[in-house]
Structures are given as C-alpha cells and as structure tokens.
Image (cartoon, rainbow, N blue to C red; front, side, top):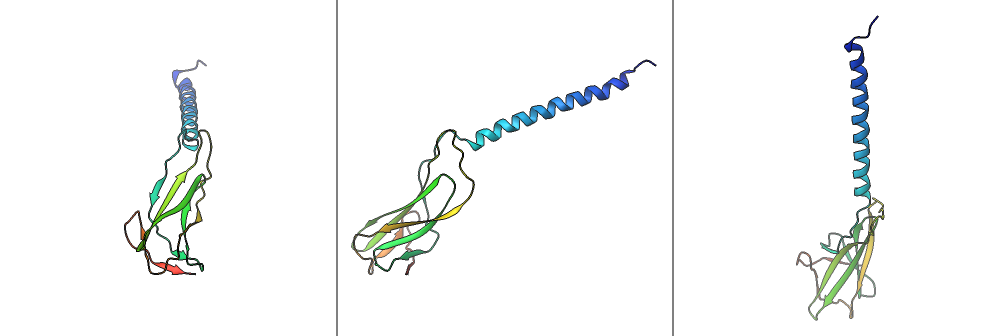
Length: 137
C-alpha cells in the first residue's frame, strides 16, 4: 500500500506543534530570567506611615514598622522644632545587577531618636502632612 498525503500530515503537524511549544518555553524562560534579575536598583521612596507610631519609655524614641521585601530596607528619619516633629519613612531597594531578591514580605521596625523628649510636640508624617497619633509604651 502506498502512503497518502493524509498519513504524513499528522506527523508534520505534530513536528510543527513541538517546535512551536519548545520555542514558547525558551522564550518564557528568557523573560522569567530578566524579571528575576533586574539590572538596576530602585531609588529610595518616601512612604506614608500607616502603622502605629510608638513612643518608647525614654520619651525620645519613636518606632513604627514598614513592610519590606527581599532586598529592601526601611528607615525612619525626622526633623525637630520646638512645636513639632516631622517624620519621614523611606523604603530603599538594594539590588545589584544579577542578584535575585526573596519575594517574601516582612514588617521591619524602624526608629527615630529625638534630641529632646517629645512632651507636647505634634508629630507629623512628611508623606501625608497629617499629624500622627502616638502611642506611649
């Protein structure tokens, strides 16, 4: 019996399908590698203070928390006057080219030490311009 064109067609279709799927898999892998290992770092960004701000028993240390990921670090800084304290919460990503950062998120405690006890001064979030409620420890 002689092979007909119908018998060869499924083999060609199968071969083409395998080539296409292989090409897509290689392409997808290439894109995943680029996403997992960015070649630039992200500059610091100011974040609003969304968690409780706590005044330590010393009356001079204010602490809050910031959600951070693998290569990120939070920092709380401030400026003081006789009437107010302005706090700035920043998030910085420290990622080098080719470095893979963990995708987990954790809460990092960050603190700012005042030069003098807080007493009756107002504490303001620089990102929002709004006064913060301070809980005493």
